[in-house]
Amino acid sequence: ECSKEVNDSMLRSQDAQAWWESKNPSEQQQHVIPCVYQEPDDKIEVPQRKLVLVREAAGSVKTAGSKRVIAEEVLTLVNNTHTPHAVKVRTTATDRYRVEPSITLIKEGELMRFKVALIDLAGFNNDRFQIRCAPVHQKEGEEKVTEKTVRKSEWWAQPEIKDQYYDFMLSSVLIRSTGEQITDLETEKRLLQEELAVVAAAAAAANQDAGRAPAASGDGVQPQYQDPGKLEAESTLLSQPFRKDSGPDDDEEISEGEYD
Image 1 (cartoon, one colour):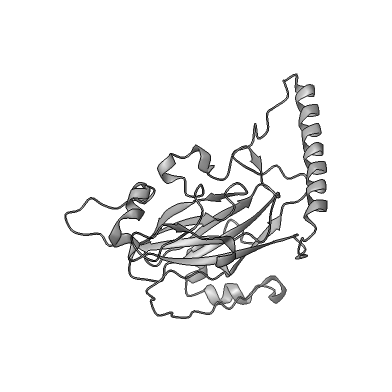
Image 2 (image 1 turned 120 degrees about the vertical axis):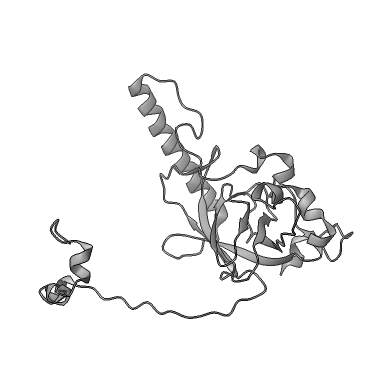
């Protein structure tokens, strides 16, 4: 730990070597950070092939809107291309998840993380997610494409966009923080209800002590995810099932079994 007398210029000056050598080796740490050059690609990179949703600890008060977060995962995308990309995340189980952000623009060379929150265990069955990506080619003289622009379904429906976008499909699995996969959902639902009862009782007791009326679900906790139900209809990305788009006029729904 540096004292107040030590500053950056001292560590980089001609006398810096003597300062470093004066320190006990046991107090020093060395880290090797490899640097690898990666050739630009023509598509967004998705390092994950499966979303591993980690169960929140008992007593957690993390919420997505007014819903308690049961488990969450962070989806990472890397734009290793020369072109900005519009990205949106969709799922086969729209009532079970919240995503933040659910749609965004990723600049060239930029890394973006998406928080995926499971808010309902009912019917969970290795749900699938679709990551839809579209390169954004800004043409001279046209209105600038912004995040607000790509939130509109009309933008994605343009023939030139439908001809260029591409999808990634990801499955999901639910685990505990220990790494153990959760397969007995009925038992998990019972445990969840017991956890919710404990949290509600604690909140009621705290409100009673403070002389306040019982708080509604989610009150006093800052939501950390977008609730698609509160977004304008044109940008509610998780309200529609996946579509199979093999051409500009193809709007046929596909079943969950076809995502394998």
